[in-house]
Amino acid sequence: MNTNSNTYTVIYSTVLVVVVAAVLAFAAMALKPMQDENVKKETITQVLTAAAQSDADVTISEDTNVMEMYVEKITDAFYVDGNGNRKGQMNMGKEDLNKIQVATTADLKNQNDIIKKIEAGQTDLLSSLELPVYVLDINGKEITVIPCYGAGLWGPIWGYLAVTEDGKTIAGAVFDHKSETPGLGAKITEDFFQGQFPGKKFGEGEERFAVVKGGAKGAENGVDAISGATITSQALGKTINTWSKYYEPYLSKAAAAKQAAAEMAAAQEAAEEAEAEETENVEE
Image 1 (cartoon, rainbow, N blue to C red):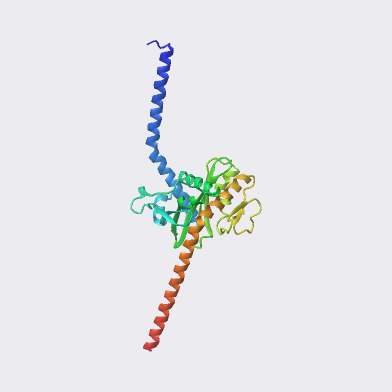
Image 2 (image 1 turned 180 degrees about the vertical axis):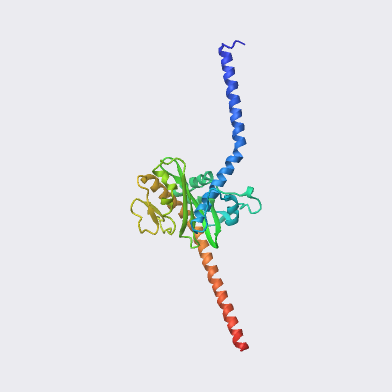
């Protein structure tokens, strides 16, 4: 074949493209398990970091085996719909670390797409939501971690909020992003910003939480925005506000159940003490 002909050039180019495509496809398939594992570890690290902020004695460092710590701390992991009803269980890896299941940012994006439709009026989709919930035992305290996901200035932003047993008080927060501006919107990942969240509470009504420039000082349900990153700050505030609204039915039910259980336990203890005292008086 004439190597200078157009036919040869077309054939050669076609074969080269097919070979390169095949190699890339094989590489992608070979690397996917490792990529999936890294995404899982990153998600688990962020869940644990948010929960750990509820207790100064719990720390996470580069040397921490987050998979083992997660299995040790997690007590429940499941999904809820927009009405607060449980829909499915996630494998917590109690028997096999490799089988741990978590919701990735891709899963959160899918849920956010449904939330957008609900916000646009398709309220019948409330039961279609599958919002992830992680319940952890942090030194005897039950901490529930819920994610949030939305659009920042240049791309998606997301985070994890640790909530106490009352279903309203934030115990910790971790945020991340894909492409916010370095030195500005990207600062949502920094401690000075995330450190504002512990002790804050979700409000009621349409504005449950806000990230407000210079206006959140002293506010129970808001924090100060990042200077020079107004759009990212407002976007994060909207994201937290929206997602917390759809978690509220579950958090309220869980808090009420906890309160009822505590009252029942207190009543049982009081009855046992009264019975013991009565028995003691009779014996005397």
